[in-house]
Image (cartoon, helix red, strand yellow):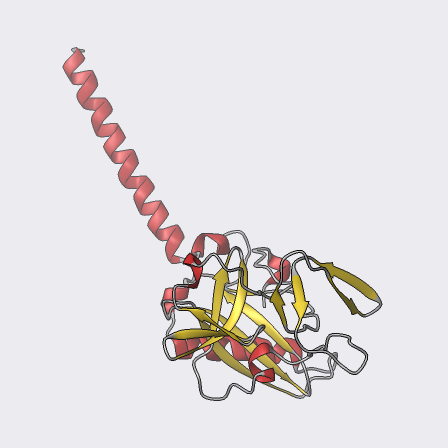
Length: 227
């Protein structure tokens, strides 16, 4: 067999393999749901249905819940807030990466199984702050509590940052900042940080000023954290 025929046959075989691989990949991909398969309204309903099953049952003390969409600085839907009654809340991330779903991860990932109480603060360099939660004392660097009780201890909030700030009809934002998150609303072309209750520039990521962020929260793409 001539060298030309060998090269031609190898080329044909390679092309056929590539086509077969593409077909298998497309069939494989089609079996998995993607976040883009659903509208925002459908996502809210799906999260509501899942949350009802998880939180409104005989194993919990919750009696009612409400789901709100959360957006990034570009007004893209990225997550959800679950407000629980009588008191409690949960942040849920929308898993846009369909490839994660292939490994048993759900489309909706809880931030944590138990949101801890939180306190308002501002960033203050070289100032240590302490917070006691359920018999555990946490130390935080470079912060100052801005809401204190009669004993000069930080006031702890069990309700979400949005409910505590009495946010009603405003669009809710969940802004990623240095691998952490800031709950916010937009007013007069600025973001209001609902932890510090101070305004941030619309281009907050470009500022050199450090911003208060939510403690004890992270996106963990593992099956144990799916809603």
